[in-house]
Image (tube, rainbow, N blue to C red; front, side, top):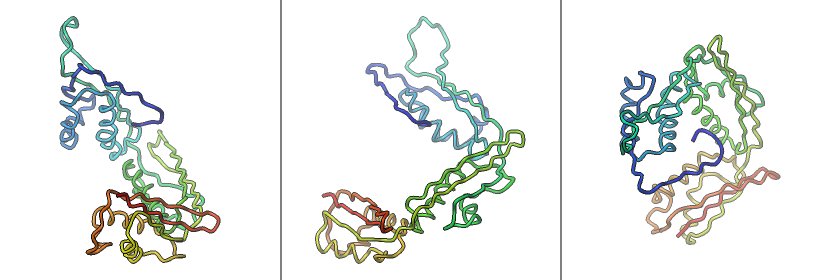
Length: 267
């Protein structure tokens, strides 16, 4: 869950071992009400290293990142058994997770290169973080997404963000050198529809908000998809339509700087 590569997971029938409890070397986790509320998601469940690693990544790691422990090390998990080793293994296994929290890093900001559509002030505001305050790792990760979303609203669908962190372990600070390749600002080309009736197509085109040649706003496209999935009456009105799902693609044409929206209604 935390890296790249292939994972081969085995399932063995007849070995119905469960996780009795999950404990940690850091007593702060035992004192955290939030963490304790999440433990039932893994305790009592079938023993699985993949499930444990996923739980650590999704529930435990954010606890440390939010406090500025950006280099926290979790695990590897250990099954710690007690009693006579010659006896049959228990069906419920206690799992211990060693934790090295590491230092709390302070936020030193980011230096931006290659940006023109968004100013350094705007980018820093979107990234978030208070200079001199604890570097909230979750806020930083969300900040990169906010920056990509802002570029998408301005038609920059091919933007590439290369953020290189610099850790100063002596001063316990972190900063980023951020290189941005914005690419072209795409304009809307056409709406290509398949699998829908003629009247349904007409209403779809009426509900679409970006005019041909207008600057493409990806947030408008995403909101349109949400309406199709959750509130289709906002688009089709009283027209009876039935579909199981909507395939959707953005087809960019670099030569003329346009993007077409393709929607396929699956019956």
